[in-house]
Length: 378
Image (tube, rainbow, N blue to C red; front, side):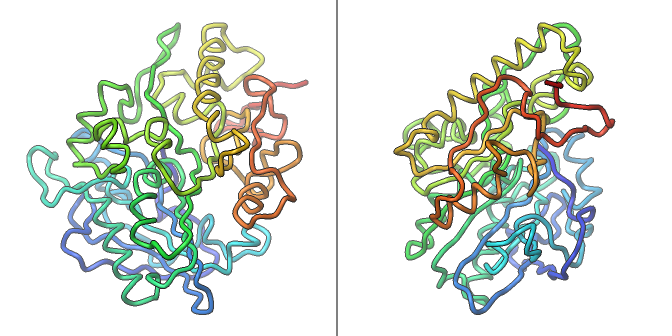
C-alpha cells in the first residue's frame, strides 16, 4: 500500500528529524535512516508510528523510489507532524500527551529488511527496514528514556501497518516491563487472488500472490515473527492473516471491507469499474463480495468477545483514509473506538464491523481522486 511521502505531509508543529548513525540503518540508496520525536519528559507512554509508502521488488520499481523520501533521506523534511503524532486536541485528543515517534520509511521492504550490503542480487539498493527500526530504538533508549517506558503503542498505516505485525512479539520481549500493543490501519493483508474478469488490470504495486512471497522475503532478508516462523516457516509470516494468531500483544485492526489500494493495485480490479457504484459490473461486484467475505473470515477471531483485540471494519472503498470524523459505524469513528479500547473505557465499542453488504456505509469519505461519488445512494 501507499501513503504520502514524508516531504509531502503537512506540518503543524515542528518535530525535528534525527538521522541515525548506525552503519546498518540505511535507506535504499545508502543514506542514513531517521525518525522524528516529539518528546514529553513527564510521560512514560510512547507511540511509535511506522510510516507507509509501498514496497519495491524489481530494479525499476526500486529505482523510482530513489528519487524521493521513500528511498533516500536526502528528501526527508527537516520537521513534520502527521497522524497519531498530532498535538491537536481535536484530531488526537488522548494520545497527544504521549512521547510520539514517526519512523521515516525509506527501505521499501515493509520494515522487514535485514540486508547489510547492496549487491547485484538486490538491484544495487539496500533493504534495511528492520535495522532502521532497531537502531532508532537504541537511540531512543540511550538518549530519551524509552527503555523505561510503561506503555508502548506500535502503529502504522499501509506498508507501515504491515511492518507492525512482525515486530510486536519482538518489541514486547525487548520492553518486557511495558504494556506493548499494536494499532494497524490498512495493514491486515492476505494472499492476493486477483480479479481476472472483464477489464482486469495487473499489479501496479508488488505481486502479493502466494507464489510471489518467498522471493520477496529472500530479496529483503525479511525479519518475521519468530513464533509464527517456528510453526509456518518464514515467508508466510509476512502477512497478518497468517501471523496474527501468533502475536501475543493485543492489536486494534482498522481495515476497509473494500480496500482501495489492495483491490486496484494488487488485485487487478479496474478503478473505473468501482468509482461509480450504481454501475458496477456483475463480475466486479461478485469479486468485491468474495473479497469482503474473506476479510470477514480473517477478522473473525479478533471479533470474538473473548479476544482482547479491537476491530473497526467499514464497508467503504478506502485505504488509509480513516478520518477523525469519518467513516462512522453505529455513530462511532475509528479514533473513538481505538481510544476506548486502549484506555479501557466503554463509551465506544471496541469491535465495530459493518454488516450492510458491499460499499454501503453512507459515511465513507464521499469522493475519490477523480471527485466521483463512491457511496451508493439509499
